[in-house]
Every structure is written in C-alpha cells, then in structure tokens.
Length: 272
Image (cartoon, rainbow, N blue to C red; front, top):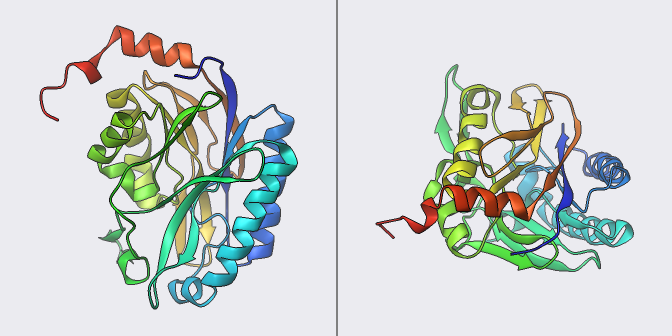
C-alpha cells in the first residue's frame, strides 16, 4: 500500500459535440485542480465528445488521436497523474471502444480499460439507450494499476457501477481507489448514483473516485452531475453538485488501513 496521502480532484463537465471546445474546457478544469494542489485529476465519461452515436463512429479516429495527445501533453505539462475519463476509440467495423486511460506525470499511458458492461436500457418517458449498437465491449478483465505514489487504482466506466462483482475483482487485484467516470442519466442518477457509489466504497473498503457529466447535452439528453469522492467508510467527502467545475479531497492510505482494520470484511468472505 502507498504511504503518503495526496489530493485528488474530480472534474464535472457539460460536454457537447465540439471536440476542441470540450478539450479546452477540460484543460481549464485540470489547471484549476492543479492550482488547488491535486496530484491526480479525473475527467468524466465522454469528456471529449458527447454527441450522437453515428457521429462517434464517424469521427472516432480523430477523437481518439487528439484526445490521447491532449491527455499525454496535459499530464506532462502539469506533472500529474491524469485519468482520461472515457472517449471513443475505433474497434471493429462501425463500432468503437468506450475507453478510460490513466497517464503518469511524464505523459506516459500507464493502463487503459475498455468498458465491458454496455448500457442497453429503456427508462421512463420513452428514454432508451442502446450502447451496444455502437460500442464494442472490452475484454472482461479487471484493469488495475498500482505504484507507491497513488496506490492501487481500479478502472471502470459508468454502467459498470451496477455490477459489484467487477469491483470485488478489482480489489482482489490490489485496487484501493475505484475510478468510475460517468455520464449518468438524470432519470437514474437522482435515485441510484449516490447509493451505488457509497455501496461500492463500503463493501470494498476503498475510496471511490467518480467524475461526472452534468446538464443538457443537445436537446434530448440530460445527465445527473454530482461528481463525487467517497471514502472507504462510505462518507461522501466531495460532491460537485449540479454545475460544471471541480471538487477535491484527500486520498489517505491511513484511512484505508483504519477502515479495513475496523471492518475486515474482505478477509471474512466465504464465497470467492
């Protein structure tokens, strides 16, 4: 386990269809987080582009290339760890991966994760999503990166939040901080977002790090907001509310040890 606490920041955005404007906005928020002392900064799901399904496929090459360059150069410029939310990366014909990445202070990609649980749901008022129509699921393997500076980070994206077995697999691989960049719908977010984030933190005695989208995207999509950082006890220690911006909190290895010592549920498991 890492030994030194550090400040982390989650970014909350209202991304639209202009890649350049989204990246400019992300840069402003990253700089603001660095000015507040953040050692690691996380961006939300679809931070670089949040538009129609066909547009993600049509412009996937450009989005993936420009976004990866942006993340690498920005991490290196500010000498931070940068969690690249998620963005489309070309996969098979007419499909993309929904990819989350982690970059180090030298601008090197440390690890990436392609979302495995795809959001195919029908909600109230004819609100329907069919992510599998344009996203190809990644390999069903836990994605964990660990070092002595930031500890063990487990990567996931949005809808993964509803599958606790994935987070238990991340913790089994050494995760101490669970990264969950999201564009949670307003309809589901108002009832499920906070309870699910707190549950993942409590049951895994781990920090939860959840950047988010907020507000209207185009004319017919609305996201919930409330980017959060939750501590291993399940306490919300940062909440961005409903407006774009950043919030920061301290990731403290002593807190992880304290909670895991008080409630050693990870050691009491009977089914594995």
